[in-house]
Length: 113
Image (cartoon, rainbow, N blue to C red):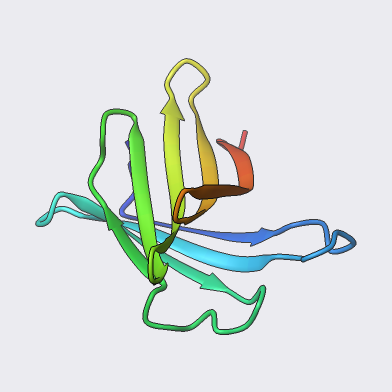
């Protein structure tokens, strides 16, 4: 799936938008555990450096589903889905709070040409 051991990508949405998000993330493959680790550094609401900023996920087919425990039954999901035909990734970001799911973002990642 991801060929390199570590990816680092800065994320910044349109600064004129309400609720500007600035983040940096790192994804690493851990061969021994056969899983990915995802480090998310976020300055959106403060508290970006906390105990819950690393998630782990084992590949499930063409998906890598990372889940962060927020508090109680609230979780934050970063799901990467690979589209082989387009050679691109869809990145879906969702906040799950009980039965309520709020989509935070959806991004298409492509290779630099």
